[in-house]
Image: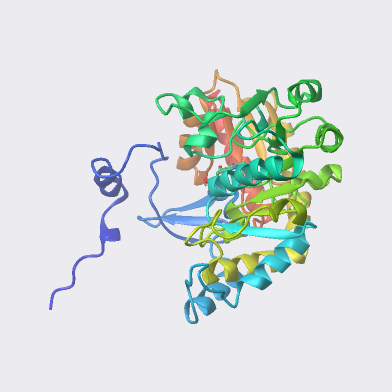
Length: 410
Ligand SMILES: Cc1ncc(COP(=O)(O)O)c(C=O)c1O
């Protein structure tokens, strides 16, 4: 009997070439083909090891294949994987209870991807506006921030200010008003009796880890309360430990009306997202008005519950805060040495590279050759978001590689 050669026996170069004719070209990945991973490390097809300083855009906050998460997934795979919401499953109640408790809100709408959570929140906010606030039919508006990133669906790109994300995808969904981020006066001017909600990222991730001034999130909370509209915080990238707190809004002691979670909620294993909200908001949804075949499936619920359990210990938030000091210190030392400036909170940084040294993509490729994986954004910025399980030594190694790459490029 002949055994078909495993596809992964092909080299990285062969695999990259093989993708070209058969895979949509909607990404421009670094030329690394990952085959295995554990913790903060990934290994390519040829066995080269790299420190993962991107962590799946924060989907891998707990590192690759965290033992507790893998165990929860394995256990659930042996019991039950999918019921659809036509029936109840024995994992969902615990997931919803623990997630509501973790976030300090009341009710959970489980979905799969981040974009679905955003779409769901938009629907909930509009319904709330018509049923509770009394906005005239089809007149509800949602105020969003410039330079936002909330996902890729047609409604979400309708209120993007990134031309690459929008061009060629119209006609767009109406009902959104865009104001500058971090500008409370502009926000206040945009809110009127039609406003259902204000939807913002507490820290703008894709924009380059843009952190608003102290007081902005508190201001948004006060303004939305005073004007009678909902505050929706998209914590899909900023939440679940990344910034040194469970949620980024906690840095200003703010509780929004709806919190959107995704990415790390699935433990890097399955796509799990959720809208977590006050009961009087989420209860506007009634049977048949919204749903998802996979949302709340028992495998996702089991992994999501295990993620919440990890966060309940506080260990990962603490690590992000403590190692965040190391990250900040390392980046501060590089300012003027190839780094023009940076923004950081917890284990999350946007680093602006001196264009004289190279683009963000150039630096990402050079770092890859040094065994460190990062991702560029907006031309000259690179994003650092390692797993929260990274050790201080590993983090210093990555910072050392960045210094080497910047100095060699100078
Ligand atoms: C803040 C934010 N919202 C929503 C999304 C969309 O999530 P997904 O790619 O899972 O649809 C992202 C993804 O990067 C994000 O960063």
